[in-house]
Image (cartoon, rainbow, N blue to C red; front, side, top):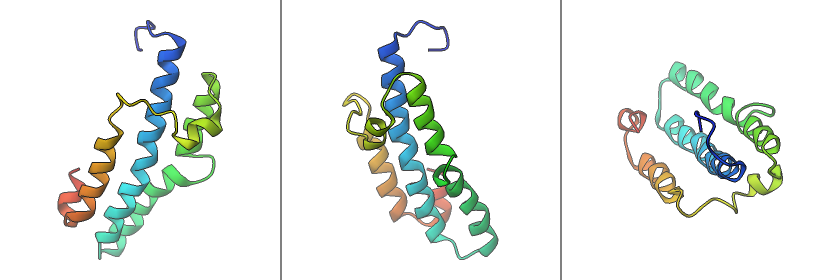
Length: 109
């Protein structure tokens, strides 16, 4: 990609799959947040969560990128076209795994 040798379709597939990955991050961050009893830590961590889910930020920026490479943002938002070769199962597993860990361990995932 950085060498400019991917086709339009390959770039679109990367954006689609990367968007799916980005949708998992706020879920994982919320799980981490729920484990902390430290008020200051929660305040800092909520900013991470907000960076992904605030209107016009994180996920919305990925949807703008999707439109820029010729994808329908609503199709991308549905995550229905995520490629099977993209290991979305690994991301779901990581999110589930974090939910079973203590706070310190979940920060390392």
